[in-house]
Image (cartoon, rainbow, N blue to C red; front, side, top):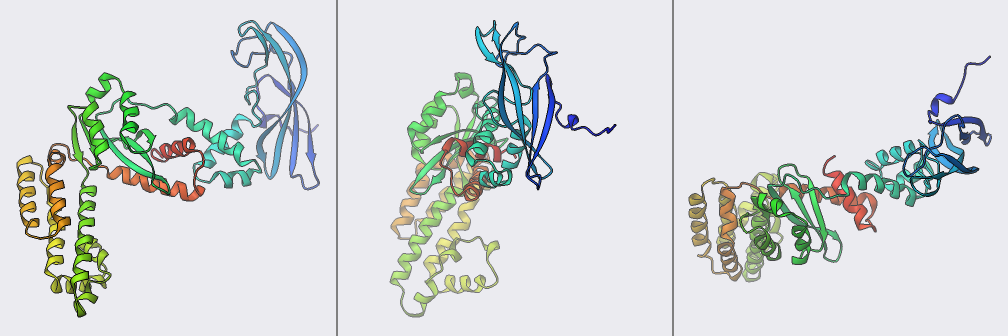
Length: 401
């Protein structure tokens, strides 16, 4: 008598294997017939309580299971309907390996979710010969369980930034815990109403526990933070301050190019990234070009020096030193007679409080820039997401992976 058995591969409680069928000559698919084991009292699917009465039996469902080797595996399951006194009506009996109405087993669903962490929905669907919509809904249901509910516990320092969601200036506002990098909330657009939704979701105690918020100089965000968190320190991110000066430098460069003549004009042409790059990132080919540019144009040499000096605002840990550095920088920059520089000086003066606060809270939104990069990878892999909620769940998953 043969000792071979497939029973061990299907450790399903309250079920018994009746027979198996191999389809096609190449064994590309197989079907296992299962039926309820009548030695056990059926349980209600919703409540899990033992039923006192069997309403009817002989119902059949086809459920997809994990592949066995190269064969697609299907389960033909005979199940019962019961009268449930707890639920007060007719219910299907509970299956230990699949939910009512679902067409895949729990273990296949878990496998699909694991694959979706690394592969696109399309790739997983092709690999398992499933509908992409089925794969997406399975992955989404797992993500909902883990990342669906917003968790606002333990928040002390926040990062807030906007991320491009689609082309055409469609944005998503992201709020993250500075210490853990955990995305705690996300909302469409980047206006006052967007952050209103977030802050109104917090309790009074949670708002009082927030000590500082890192963000850029986006006034709708500043307005809402001041309104809901009047005692929290606003800290302007270093990257965005330097980025703002970068736009000023480019405007100065274009003005100098328009006024230059002869060989000097050719030296200035195409020099945008030479001025914006950090010195340590310049290539061996770019270094002599930058040196020549700074030699032929004193104004561009000045703004280049100002770019490096601006970074010193975020070097000091004493507010007095930061204030002195800011005053010195504005005085030096004021010697350049250019409207873009003048406007930037006024902007720095207006938002000086957020720069000074960095001395007390040396934080920024650089981690959110890392999240932004992850988002770009997710979008590129999936060729865009039509379901914004699913996209956001994938972002939250990527930030803890």
